[in-house]
Length: 254
Ligand SMILES: [Zn+2]
Image 1 (cartoon, protein in one colour):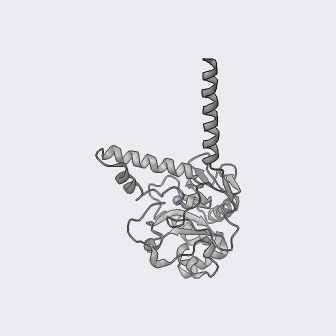
Image 2 (cartoon, rainbow, N blue to C red):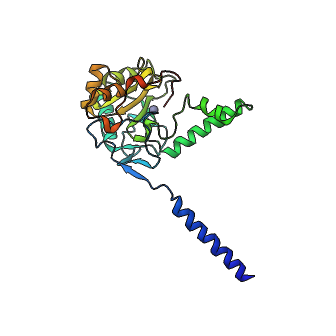
Image 3 (cartoon, helix red, strand yellow):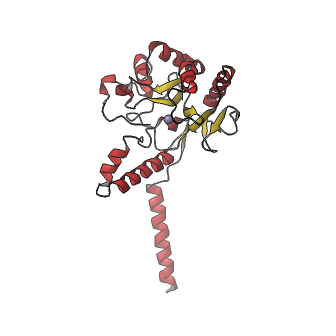
């Protein structure tokens, strides 16, 4: 009996070793998201790898001025250079009398995006018990990005709003942000009028750090990131794209 038990354990162990060799747990791949000459592009046609993690993530709680900005979650993180630029921007806003910001989202892991999408699918299925999971998933993808396709995976995107305001659009913070974020290296990533190209409806609150040089050109030439990259000869490596490939239907929230 003991011998049989031992054989079974040995058999199970061998299987576990074999499976482990065939399907190793996804090791994280840390990427310097600011290393290229051109901004890193993430959208539904340019997903990041499942193991992707940005380098140099820092805690927002430990790095932003609580007198100027409130954090929705204590564990929010973003890439250090973007956080430094954010602080510079918020100090400048404060000098103009604009305070009371609120940050709702920054870096989001791929696992977290999967959780957000699954929660949305569950909510839809609850409202539509007769629907298939696949139908509910398609509906969910109208407002939640597919895991690996959210710009928040880069650690360079921040959702910033006005504290206590029910809608951000029209607030003095929104007006200041849209007028000045470019000077600090941020772009308003999803603007009205660019939806056919970005595939995402306007989001006044979603800013993306690209560095001052790129941001100012995009502002001056009124180019969204996809349009800007298409103008650059060396953008191949980050997914230079053909604008005509975009499908203007089914806008997604990021
Ligand atoms: Zn966002």
